[in-house]
Length: 207
Length: 207
DNA sequence: TAGATTGTTAATCGATTAACAATC
DNA sequence: TAGATTGTTAATCGATTAACAATC
Image (tube, rainbow over all chains, first blue to last red; front, side, top):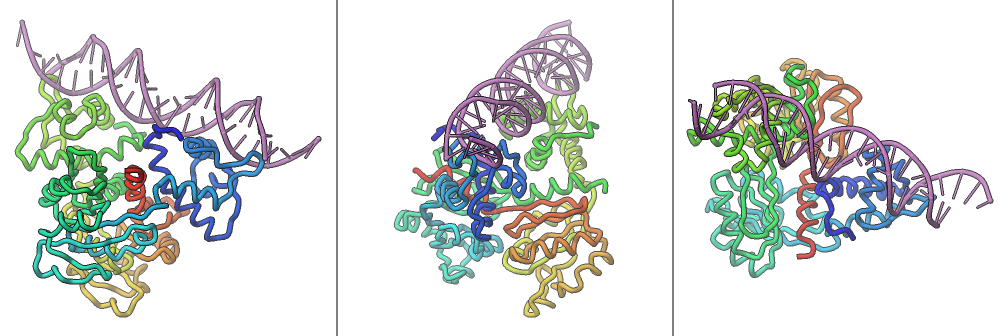
Protein backbone atom coordinates (compact mmCIF):
# COMPACT_ATOMS: atom_id res chain seq x y z
CA UNK A 1 0.00 0.00 0.00
CA UNK A 2 1.23 3.44 -0.97
CA UNK A 3 2.13 5.31 2.21
CA UNK A 4 1.66 8.78 0.82
CA UNK A 5 -1.88 9.03 -0.41
CA UNK A 6 -2.87 12.53 -1.47
CA UNK A 7 -5.49 14.39 0.53
CA UNK A 8 -7.65 14.71 -2.60
CA UNK A 9 -7.96 10.93 -2.74
CA UNK A 10 -8.61 10.50 0.99
CA UNK A 11 -11.40 13.04 0.91
CA UNK A 12 -13.15 11.04 -1.80
CA UNK A 13 -13.10 7.80 0.19
CA UNK A 14 -16.20 8.53 2.29
CA UNK A 15 -18.18 9.10 -0.90
CA UNK A 16 -17.05 5.75 -2.31
CA UNK A 17 -18.03 4.21 1.00
CA UNK A 18 -21.46 5.77 0.87
CA UNK A 19 -22.24 4.78 -2.72
CA UNK A 20 -20.92 1.25 -2.36
CA UNK A 21 -23.01 0.78 0.76
CA UNK A 22 -26.03 1.89 -1.24
CA UNK A 23 -25.22 -0.54 -4.08
CA UNK A 24 -24.80 -3.33 -1.58
CA UNK A 25 -28.16 -2.47 -0.05
CA UNK A 26 -29.70 -2.70 -3.52
CA UNK A 27 -28.16 -6.15 -4.07
CA UNK A 28 -25.79 -5.07 -6.82
CA UNK A 29 -22.98 -7.64 -6.81
CA UNK A 30 -20.67 -6.29 -9.43
CA UNK A 31 -19.81 -2.93 -10.93
CA UNK A 32 -17.40 -1.55 -13.50
CA UNK A 33 -15.55 1.73 -13.04
CA UNK A 34 -17.68 3.04 -15.92
CA UNK A 35 -20.97 2.19 -14.22
CA UNK A 36 -19.76 3.53 -10.88
CA UNK A 37 -18.68 6.69 -12.67
CA UNK A 38 -22.24 7.21 -13.87
CA UNK A 39 -23.73 7.14 -10.42
CA UNK A 40 -20.96 8.67 -8.28
CA UNK A 41 -19.89 11.40 -10.67
CA UNK A 42 -16.13 10.80 -10.71
CA UNK A 43 -14.57 9.74 -14.04
CA UNK A 44 -13.96 6.03 -14.55
CA UNK A 45 -10.29 6.82 -14.92
CA UNK A 46 -10.20 8.63 -11.60
CA UNK A 47 -12.00 5.79 -9.87
CA UNK A 48 -9.43 3.27 -11.10
CA UNK A 49 -6.58 5.58 -10.15
CA UNK A 50 -8.02 6.20 -6.70
CA UNK A 51 -8.58 2.54 -5.92
CA UNK A 52 -5.17 1.52 -7.19
CA UNK A 53 -3.55 3.69 -4.54
CA UNK A 54 -4.60 1.02 -2.10
CA UNK A 55 -4.46 -2.14 -4.17
CA UNK A 56 -5.82 -3.89 -7.22
CA UNK A 57 -9.34 -4.62 -6.10
CA UNK A 58 -10.80 -5.26 -9.54
CA UNK A 59 -10.54 -7.91 -12.16
CA UNK A 60 -9.91 -7.29 -15.86
CA UNK A 61 -12.94 -7.95 -17.99
CA UNK A 62 -15.19 -8.17 -14.95
CA UNK A 63 -15.03 -5.01 -12.88
CA UNK A 64 -15.27 -4.86 -9.10
CA UNK A 65 -17.06 -7.10 -6.66
CA UNK A 66 -19.20 -4.60 -4.76
CA UNK A 67 -19.18 -6.43 -1.46
CA UNK A 68 -15.42 -6.95 -1.57
CA UNK A 69 -14.72 -3.37 -2.63
CA UNK A 70 -16.95 -2.02 0.11
CA UNK A 71 -15.08 -4.09 2.68
CA UNK A 72 -11.75 -2.82 1.38
CA UNK A 73 -12.83 0.83 1.57
CA UNK A 74 -14.32 0.18 4.97
CA UNK A 75 -11.01 -1.19 6.20
CA UNK A 76 -9.00 1.61 4.56
CA UNK A 77 -11.14 4.14 6.45
CA UNK A 78 -10.49 2.21 9.66
CA UNK A 79 -14.13 1.25 10.08
CA UNK A 80 -13.33 -2.37 10.75
CA UNK A 81 -12.47 -1.17 14.25
CA UNK A 82 -14.69 0.69 16.71
CA UNK A 83 -14.02 4.02 18.34
CA UNK A 84 -15.08 5.36 21.70
CA UNK A 85 -16.09 9.00 21.75
CA UNK A 86 -17.17 11.79 24.04
CA UNK A 87 -19.03 14.99 23.29
CA UNK A 88 -18.00 18.18 25.06
CA UNK A 89 -20.93 20.57 25.36
CA UNK A 90 -24.55 19.47 25.66
CA UNK A 91 -26.09 22.43 23.86
CA UNK A 92 -28.21 22.13 20.76
CA UNK A 93 -25.48 20.82 18.52
CA UNK A 94 -24.07 18.42 21.11
CA UNK A 95 -27.59 17.22 21.63
CA UNK A 96 -28.17 16.74 17.91
CA UNK A 97 -24.90 14.85 17.43
CA UNK A 98 -25.61 12.61 20.42
CA UNK A 99 -28.83 11.62 18.70
CA UNK A 100 -27.27 11.41 15.25
CA UNK A 101 -27.91 7.89 14.08
CA UNK A 102 -25.26 7.73 11.33
CA UNK A 103 -22.91 7.90 14.18
CA UNK A 104 -23.56 4.61 15.89
CA UNK A 105 -24.02 2.84 12.57
CA UNK A 106 -20.34 3.11 11.82
CA UNK A 107 -18.86 1.84 15.05
CA UNK A 108 -18.49 5.09 16.93
CA UNK A 109 -19.64 4.59 20.50
CA UNK A 110 -20.61 7.65 22.46
CA UNK A 111 -19.54 7.01 26.05
CA UNK A 112 -20.18 10.33 27.75
CA UNK A 113 -21.18 13.95 27.35
CA UNK A 114 -19.51 16.73 29.34
CA UNK A 115 -21.03 20.01 30.39
CA UNK A 116 -20.26 23.02 32.54
CA UNK A 117 -23.88 23.96 33.19
CA UNK A 118 -25.24 22.32 36.39
CA UNK A 119 -28.70 22.44 34.84
CA UNK A 120 -27.69 19.76 32.33
CA UNK A 121 -25.33 17.60 34.39
CA UNK A 122 -26.93 14.31 35.33
CA UNK A 123 -29.30 14.28 32.37
CA UNK A 124 -29.43 11.40 29.92
CA UNK A 125 -29.21 12.16 26.22
CA UNK A 126 -29.78 9.22 23.92
CA UNK A 127 -29.02 6.92 26.87
CA UNK A 128 -25.70 8.61 27.50
CA UNK A 129 -25.06 10.46 30.73
CA UNK A 130 -24.10 14.12 30.95
CA UNK A 131 -21.16 14.55 33.34
CA UNK A 132 -19.49 17.53 34.94
CA UNK A 133 -16.77 18.92 32.66
CA UNK A 134 -14.31 18.60 35.57
CA UNK A 135 -14.46 14.84 35.18
CA UNK A 136 -13.49 14.92 31.50
CA UNK A 137 -9.80 14.03 31.77
CA UNK A 138 -10.21 11.17 34.22
CA UNK A 139 -13.14 9.77 32.24
CA UNK A 140 -11.10 9.79 29.03
CA UNK A 141 -8.22 7.95 30.69
CA UNK A 142 -10.42 5.37 32.39
CA UNK A 143 -12.51 4.66 29.32
CA UNK A 144 -9.82 4.80 26.64
CA UNK A 145 -11.65 7.41 24.64
CA UNK A 146 -10.39 7.79 21.06
CA UNK A 147 -12.23 10.81 19.73
CA UNK A 148 -13.44 14.00 21.43
CA UNK A 149 -16.18 16.01 19.75
CA UNK A 150 -16.17 19.68 20.72
CA UNK A 151 -19.61 21.32 20.69
CA UNK A 152 -18.85 24.18 23.05
CA UNK A 153 -19.12 27.85 22.24
CA UNK A 154 -16.31 29.65 20.43
CA UNK A 155 -14.64 30.88 23.62
CA UNK A 156 -14.20 27.50 25.30
CA UNK A 157 -13.08 25.47 22.30
CA UNK A 158 -9.35 26.21 22.46
CA UNK A 159 -9.26 25.80 26.25
CA UNK A 160 -10.90 22.40 25.96
CA UNK A 161 -8.45 21.51 23.20
CA UNK A 162 -5.54 22.38 25.46
CA UNK A 163 -6.95 20.09 28.12
CA UNK A 164 -7.57 17.32 25.59
CA UNK A 165 -3.97 17.53 24.40
CA UNK A 166 -2.87 16.19 27.76
CA UNK A 167 -5.13 13.14 27.50
CA UNK A 168 -4.88 10.06 25.31
CA UNK A 169 -7.50 11.07 22.76
CA UNK A 170 -6.29 10.52 19.23
CA UNK A 171 -8.57 12.93 17.41
CA UNK A 172 -10.60 16.08 17.94
CA UNK A 173 -13.66 16.84 15.86
CA UNK A 174 -14.40 20.49 16.49
CA UNK A 175 -17.72 22.18 15.70
CA UNK A 176 -17.09 25.47 17.50
CA UNK A 177 -16.64 28.17 14.83
CA UNK A 178 -12.91 28.61 15.33
CA UNK A 179 -9.85 26.70 14.13
CA UNK A 180 -8.48 25.03 17.25
CA UNK A 181 -4.78 24.20 17.14
CA UNK A 182 -2.66 21.59 18.89
CA UNK A 183 1.04 21.22 19.47
CA UNK A 184 0.92 17.45 19.59
CA UNK A 185 0.09 14.98 16.84
CA UNK A 186 -3.59 14.68 17.71
CA UNK A 187 -5.61 14.74 14.51
CA UNK A 188 -7.92 17.74 14.34
CA UNK A 189 -10.84 18.48 12.06
CA UNK A 190 -12.35 21.91 12.36
CA UNK A 191 -15.83 21.83 10.90
CA UNK A 192 -17.32 25.13 9.85
CA UNK A 193 -20.92 24.42 8.98
CA UNK A 194 -21.45 28.00 7.94
CA UNK A 195 -18.71 27.83 5.25
CA UNK A 196 -20.92 25.65 3.11
CA UNK A 197 -23.75 28.11 3.35
CA UNK A 198 -21.48 31.03 2.46
CA UNK A 199 -20.38 29.17 -0.65
CA UNK A 200 -24.02 28.61 -1.56
CA UNK A 201 -24.68 32.30 -1.08
CA UNK A 202 -21.79 33.15 -3.39
CA UNK A 203 -23.54 31.29 -6.18
CA UNK A 204 -27.04 32.68 -5.67
CA UNK A 205 -26.20 36.26 -4.80
CA UNK A 206 -27.08 37.71 -8.19
CA UNK A 207 -29.98 35.46 -9.05
CA UNK B 1 -14.05 40.87 -12.18
CA UNK B 2 -13.06 37.47 -13.53
CA UNK B 3 -16.23 35.55 -14.31
CA UNK B 4 -14.72 32.11 -14.02
CA UNK B 5 -13.29 31.79 -10.55
CA UNK B 6 -12.10 28.29 -9.75
CA UNK B 7 -13.89 26.28 -7.09
CA UNK B 8 -10.64 26.00 -5.12
CA UNK B 9 -10.60 29.77 -4.69
CA UNK B 10 -14.30 30.06 -3.83
CA UNK B 11 -13.97 27.44 -1.12
CA UNK B 12 -11.25 29.46 0.56
CA UNK B 13 -13.34 32.64 0.70
CA UNK B 14 -15.24 31.75 3.90
CA UNK B 15 -11.92 31.23 5.69
CA UNK B 16 -10.68 34.64 4.59
CA UNK B 17 -13.98 36.06 5.78
CA UNK B 18 -13.60 34.40 9.18
CA UNK B 19 -10.01 35.47 9.78
CA UNK B 20 -10.55 39.02 8.59
CA UNK B 21 -13.55 39.34 10.89
CA UNK B 22 -11.37 38.20 13.76
CA UNK B 23 -8.66 40.73 12.86
CA UNK B 24 -11.26 43.47 12.67
CA UNK B 25 -12.56 42.46 16.09
CA UNK B 26 -9.01 42.75 17.44
CA UNK B 27 -8.66 46.26 15.99
CA UNK B 28 -6.03 45.32 13.42
CA UNK B 29 -6.25 47.98 10.71
CA UNK B 30 -3.72 46.80 8.22
CA UNK B 31 -2.17 43.50 7.17
CA UNK B 32 0.28 42.28 4.55
CA UNK B 33 -0.16 39.05 2.63
CA UNK B 34 2.86 37.75 4.58
CA UNK B 35 1.31 38.46 7.97
CA UNK B 36 -2.04 37.05 6.89
CA UNK B 37 -0.23 33.99 5.62
CA UNK B 38 1.19 33.39 9.10
CA UNK B 39 -2.18 33.32 10.76
CA UNK B 40 -4.42 31.80 8.08
CA UNK B 41 -1.99 29.18 6.79
CA UNK B 42 -2.20 29.89 3.05
CA UNK B 43 0.99 31.09 1.34
CA UNK B 44 1.38 34.84 0.83
CA UNK B 45 1.57 34.19 -2.88
CA UNK B 46 -1.71 32.28 -2.85
CA UNK B 47 -3.42 35.01 -0.87
CA UNK B 48 -2.41 37.65 -3.41
CA UNK B 49 -3.44 35.39 -6.28
CA UNK B 50 -6.79 34.62 -4.69
CA UNK B 51 -7.65 38.23 -3.97
CA UNK B 52 -6.59 39.40 -7.41
CA UNK B 53 -9.25 37.21 -8.95
CA UNK B 54 -11.71 39.77 -7.68
CA UNK B 55 -9.76 43.01 -7.82
CA UNK B 56 -6.68 44.80 -6.58
CA UNK B 57 -7.63 45.37 -2.97
CA UNK B 58 -4.14 46.08 -1.68
CA UNK B 59 -1.62 48.84 -2.00
CA UNK B 60 2.04 48.34 -2.85
CA UNK B 61 4.35 48.99 0.08
CA UNK B 62 1.42 49.02 2.50
CA UNK B 63 -0.57 45.81 2.33
CA UNK B 64 -4.30 45.52 2.79
CA UNK B 65 -6.71 47.63 4.79
CA UNK B 66 -8.43 45.01 6.95
CA UNK B 67 -11.79 46.73 7.16
CA UNK B 68 -11.89 47.37 3.43
CA UNK B 69 -10.77 43.85 2.55
CA UNK B 70 -13.34 42.35 4.88
CA UNK B 71 -16.08 44.38 3.22
CA UNK B 72 -14.91 43.26 -0.21
CA UNK B 73 -14.94 39.57 0.75
CA UNK B 74 -18.28 40.06 2.45
CA UNK B 75 -19.72 41.49 -0.75
CA UNK B 76 -18.11 38.81 -2.94
CA UNK B 77 -19.81 36.16 -0.79
CA UNK B 78 -23.09 38.01 -1.20
CA UNK B 79 -23.36 38.82 2.49
CA UNK B 80 -24.18 42.45 1.83
CA UNK B 81 -27.67 41.16 1.13
CA UNK B 82 -29.96 39.15 3.41
CA UNK B 83 -31.52 35.79 2.71
CA UNK B 84 -34.78 34.30 3.90
CA UNK B 85 -34.65 30.64 4.80
CA UNK B 86 -36.79 27.75 5.91
CA UNK B 87 -35.84 24.52 7.62
CA UNK B 88 -37.56 21.29 6.58
CA UNK B 89 -37.61 18.82 9.46
CA UNK B 90 -37.79 19.79 13.12
CA UNK B 91 -35.80 16.86 14.46
CA UNK B 92 -32.60 17.18 16.44
CA UNK B 93 -30.55 18.65 13.64
CA UNK B 94 -33.27 21.00 12.44
CA UNK B 95 -33.66 22.08 16.02
CA UNK B 96 -29.92 22.67 16.42
CA UNK B 97 -29.67 24.67 13.20
CA UNK B 98 -32.69 26.79 14.13
CA UNK B 99 -30.83 27.74 17.29
CA UNK B 100 -27.47 28.12 15.54
CA UNK B 101 -26.41 31.66 16.22
CA UNK B 102 -23.80 31.98 13.45
CA UNK B 103 -26.75 31.80 11.25
CA UNK B 104 -28.54 35.01 12.10
CA UNK B 105 -25.26 36.86 12.45
CA UNK B 106 -24.70 36.73 8.70
CA UNK B 107 -28.05 37.94 7.47
CA UNK B 108 -29.84 34.64 7.08
CA UNK B 109 -33.36 34.99 8.42
CA UNK B 110 -35.15 31.83 9.41
CA UNK B 111 -38.81 32.37 8.53
CA UNK B 112 -40.37 28.99 9.16
CA UNK B 113 -39.80 25.36 10.01
CA UNK B 114 -41.80 22.56 8.35
CA UNK B 115 -42.65 19.21 9.82
CA UNK B 116 -44.75 16.18 9.07
CA UNK B 117 -45.17 15.09 12.68
CA UNK B 118 -48.35 16.58 14.26
CA UNK B 119 -46.62 16.40 17.63
CA UNK B 120 -44.24 19.20 16.59
CA UNK B 121 -46.50 21.34 14.40
CA UNK B 122 -47.46 24.55 16.17
CA UNK B 123 -44.36 24.61 18.38
CA UNK B 124 -42.02 27.57 18.49
CA UNK B 125 -38.30 26.93 18.05
CA UNK B 126 -36.08 29.92 18.59
CA UNK B 127 -39.14 32.14 18.06
CA UNK B 128 -39.88 30.54 14.72
CA UNK B 129 -43.07 28.61 14.18
CA UNK B 130 -43.22 24.98 13.12
CA UNK B 131 -45.75 24.56 10.29
CA UNK B 132 -47.35 21.59 8.60
CA UNK B 133 -45.18 20.38 5.72
CA UNK B 134 -48.23 20.65 3.44
CA UNK B 135 -47.95 24.43 3.69
CA UNK B 136 -44.32 24.50 2.53
CA UNK B 137 -44.81 25.49 -1.10
CA UNK B 138 -47.34 28.24 -0.47
CA UNK B 139 -45.24 29.63 2.39
CA UNK B 140 -42.15 29.78 0.18
CA UNK B 141 -44.02 31.64 -2.54
CA UNK B 142 -45.67 34.10 -0.18
CA UNK B 143 -42.52 34.84 1.78
CA UNK B 144 -40.00 34.88 -1.06
CA UNK B 145 -37.81 32.27 0.58
CA UNK B 146 -34.30 32.05 -0.88
CA UNK B 147 -32.79 29.01 0.78
CA UNK B 148 -34.32 25.73 1.98
CA UNK B 149 -32.43 23.70 4.57
CA UNK B 150 -33.28 20.01 4.48
CA UNK B 151 -33.02 18.28 7.85
CA UNK B 152 -35.32 15.36 7.13
CA UNK B 153 -34.38 11.72 7.23
CA UNK B 154 -32.68 10.07 4.29
CA UNK B 155 -35.92 8.79 2.76
CA UNK B 156 -37.71 12.11 2.53
CA UNK B 157 -34.84 14.27 1.30
CA UNK B 158 -35.18 13.65 -2.44
CA UNK B 159 -38.98 13.92 -2.32
CA UNK B 160 -38.70 17.27 -0.58
CA UNK B 161 -36.11 18.33 -3.15
CA UNK B 162 -38.49 17.48 -5.98
CA UNK B 163 -41.14 19.63 -4.35
CA UNK B 164 -38.67 22.47 -3.77
CA UNK B 165 -37.68 22.41 -7.44
CA UNK B 166 -41.14 23.66 -8.32
CA UNK B 167 -40.84 26.66 -5.99
CA UNK B 168 -38.78 29.83 -6.25
CA UNK B 169 -36.05 28.80 -3.79
CA UNK B 170 -32.61 29.50 -5.17
CA UNK B 171 -30.59 27.08 -3.07
CA UNK B 172 -30.92 23.86 -1.11
CA UNK B 173 -28.64 23.07 1.82
CA UNK B 174 -29.13 19.38 2.47
CA UNK B 175 -28.12 17.63 5.69
CA UNK B 176 -29.84 14.30 5.05
CA UNK B 177 -27.12 11.69 4.39
CA UNK B 178 -27.81 11.37 0.67
CA UNK B 179 -26.83 13.41 -2.39
CA UNK B 180 -30.07 14.99 -3.54
CA UNK B 181 -30.19 15.95 -7.21
CA UNK B 182 -32.13 18.57 -9.16
CA UNK B 183 -32.93 19.02 -12.82
CA UNK B 184 -33.15 22.80 -12.57
CA UNK B 185 -30.44 25.33 -11.82
CA UNK B 186 -31.11 25.47 -8.08
CA UNK B 187 -27.79 25.46 -6.23
CA UNK B 188 -27.42 22.41 -4.03
CA UNK B 189 -24.96 21.66 -1.26
CA UNK B 190 -25.08 18.17 0.16
CA UNK B 191 -23.43 18.19 3.57
CA UNK B 192 -22.20 14.89 4.90
CA UNK B 193 -21.17 15.50 8.47
CA UNK B 194 -20.01 11.94 8.81
CA UNK B 195 -17.47 12.29 5.97
CA UNK B 196 -15.29 14.48 8.13
CA UNK B 197 -15.30 11.92 10.86
CA UNK B 198 -14.44 9.10 8.47
CA UNK B 199 -11.45 11.11 7.26
CA UNK B 200 -10.35 11.58 10.88
CA UNK B 201 -10.69 7.86 11.44
CA UNK B 202 -8.52 7.16 8.41
CA UNK B 203 -5.70 9.06 10.07
CA UNK B 204 -5.98 7.55 13.54
CA UNK B 205 -6.78 3.97 12.62
CA UNK B 206 -3.30 2.60 13.27
CA UNK B 207 -2.37 4.79 16.20
C1' DT C 1 -11.49 -17.47 -28.12
C1' DA C 2 -13.46 -12.70 -28.22
C1' DG C 3 -15.03 -9.06 -25.48
C1' DA C 4 -14.70 -6.42 -21.57
C1' DT C 5 -12.44 -3.93 -18.26
C1' DT C 6 -8.75 -3.40 -15.25
C1' DG C 7 -4.08 -1.54 -13.82
C1' DT C 8 -0.79 1.60 -15.09
C1' DT C 9 1.93 4.77 -17.87
C1' DA C 10 1.90 8.99 -20.40
C1' DA C 11 -0.29 13.37 -21.53
C1' DT C 12 -2.89 17.12 -20.15
C1' DC C 13 -4.82 20.27 -17.34
C1' DG C 14 -5.22 23.25 -13.44
C1' DA C 15 -3.65 25.02 -9.16
C1' DT C 16 0.12 26.62 -6.37
C1' DT C 17 4.44 28.78 -5.74
C1' DA C 18 8.29 31.72 -7.11
C1' DA C 19 10.02 35.76 -8.92
C1' DC C 20 10.19 40.43 -9.86
C1' DA C 21 8.79 44.80 -12.05
C1' DA C 22 5.58 48.28 -10.67
C1' DT C 23 4.47 51.52 -7.35
C1' DC C 24 2.89 53.29 -2.99
C1' DT D 1 14.22 58.82 -1.62
C1' DA D 2 14.53 53.99 0.17
C1' DG D 3 11.93 50.26 1.79
C1' DA D 4 8.06 47.52 1.57
C1' DT D 5 4.74 44.99 -0.57
C1' DT D 6 1.52 44.48 -4.10
C1' DG D 7 -0.12 42.71 -8.75
C1' DT D 8 1.05 39.70 -12.21
C1' DT D 9 3.76 36.71 -15.18
C1' DA D 10 6.40 32.58 -15.44
C1' DA D 11 7.80 28.15 -13.44
C1' DT D 12 6.67 24.30 -10.90
C1' DC D 13 4.06 21.01 -8.93
C1' DG D 14 0.28 17.91 -8.39
C1' DA D 15 -4.03 16.06 -9.78
C1' DT D 16 -6.97 14.48 -13.43
C1' DT D 17 -7.77 12.41 -17.76
C1' DA D 18 -6.55 9.64 -21.76
C1' DA D 19 -4.70 5.72 -23.74
C1' DC D 20 -3.63 1.09 -24.10
C1' DA D 21 -1.23 -3.25 -22.97
C1' DA D 22 -2.31 -6.87 -19.82
C1' DT D 23 -5.45 -10.24 -18.60
C1' DC D 24 -9.66 -12.19 -16.83
